[in-house]
Length: 115
Length: 114
Image (cartoon, one colour):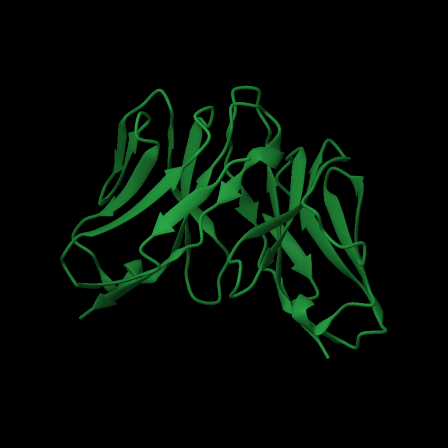
């Protein structure tokens, strides 16, 4: 498998369930991201990890809990979600360089539906 | 903090005509300006980018122009084709190496009429 992969591709869960989204990058990058994509906010950055350390949490509710055990894997743990959390969750990776901006490589996304 | 506005939200052009999408930003320290294309049901992919030390960049039918003084940059697609139909996102990133500074525009849905 090449590039950025995400599992599962589709997930339906009740508000009391606990589930996890998984992302894996095979590009040797040192940064990984979680985005939420919905009709309201097309590409909303949630979390950023540089070298396994979380560097950004964009005021995301605590019912979303990220985990980055190494530079290739990123998880998003979900618990007691709300129906408005239904969206496409995209993972991305990039190679952070000192001279600034860098291309983001996106995974295919997980389509999440909260009932 | 940085604010990015993208216009128009939807755009329909005749095949063969040109399409222009514009983004404005607020932070003068921003120095990297990528454009991503997202086809229906697919992931966003980078199509072109520009850095603040360059005013224009071109790649075949796609070009991006940057006006640092006015703090806006634009995507130009010439000789549009059906496969250009997609949602296009601009983005802005600061001079720092941290990835946390990237902000995306709200997207433009481009439709190419046959």
